[in-house]
Image (tube, rainbow, N blue to C red; front, top):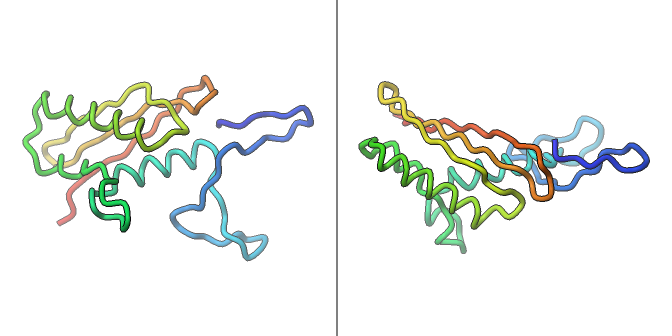
Length: 137
C-alpha cells in the first residue's frame, strides 16, 4: 500500500478517487473512496479500456488497446503494444512510474493479458496490475 505512517501512527491517504461502482458508504450517505494504489490501478484500467474519441471534449484520449484483439498476434505486435502502453501510461498517469509492461496472448480464447509493474511516485515498493482483454460476442 502506498500509505505513509505519520508520527501519530495514522496511515496517510496520498491519493483518492471515486470508485467506478459509485457505492454508498454503509456509515453515511456519502460515496466510498478508493485510495492510494487502488486509485492508481483504477485509473490505469480506465485509461486502457478507453478508446480514442470515446470521451467528450477529450477526443485524443484513449489507448485503442482493444484493437489488439482483432490483430494477428506476432512478437512484433506484442512489442509495439508493450511500448505503446508504457508511453500512454507515462503520458496520462503522473502518479506512477511504469517499470515494465508484459503483453501475452491466448490465441484459443482470443484474449490478451497485460501485466504492468509500477511504483507510486516517491515510493519504492513495486505494485503489479493485471488486466485481461477478451472479445465479447
